[in-house]
Amino acid sequence: MRAQEHNDFDAIVIAGDLGGDAAEELFSILFAWVIGGAFLSSMHDRRCKMSNAGLADAVNALDAMAAGITPNRAELMSGALTLNCLVNNNPVSTNLQLAALGLDVQASYGAVYFSDVGCRHAGKLAEEVRKLTR
Image 1 (cartoon, rainbow, N blue to C red):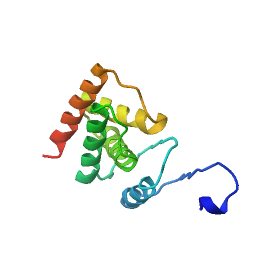
Image 2 (image 1 turned 120 degrees about the vertical axis):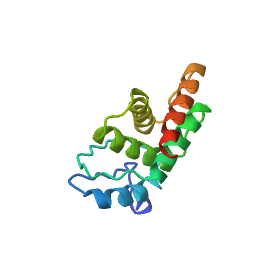
Image 3 (image 1 turned 30 degrees about the vertical axis):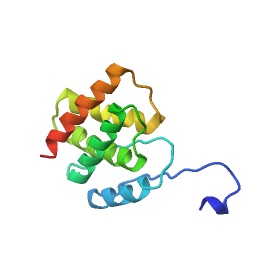
Image 4 (image 1 turned 120 degrees about the horizontal axis):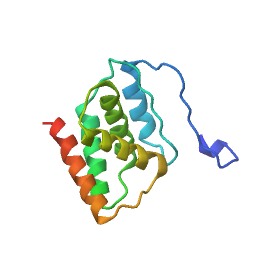
C-alpha cells in the first residue's frame, strides 16, 4: 500500500463492532506489521477471549521493558490488547491494571524512558502477568 501513495501518512482506523471472535485474529494480523502510531481499544464485548499467546506476548513486552529495551511491536500490541480485555472485563489486581496501562503507554507513545526503578517495576509486573499463564 505504502508504495502506491505519495504522502507520508499511514493510518488504519477500525470503527464499529468487530465481534469478539474476529477481533483477536484481525488485530494479530494488523499488529504484525504496524510500525508506529497510537493504540486505542475499547472492548465492550463481555465474551472477550483472553489467549495464552496474548498473555505470553504481554510478558515478553514487559520483560523487554524491564531490560530497558523497546519491546517487539507485535508482542507489545497483542499483549496490550489482551491485558485491556482482561482488565476491562474482570476484577483484577492493581498490578495487572498497571501492567495494562504500561503496555498502553508504550504502544501509544513509543519508546518510554525507564529509570532503574521503572525497569524493576516492569519486571515485577511481568511476573504478575506470568502467573496467569501457569
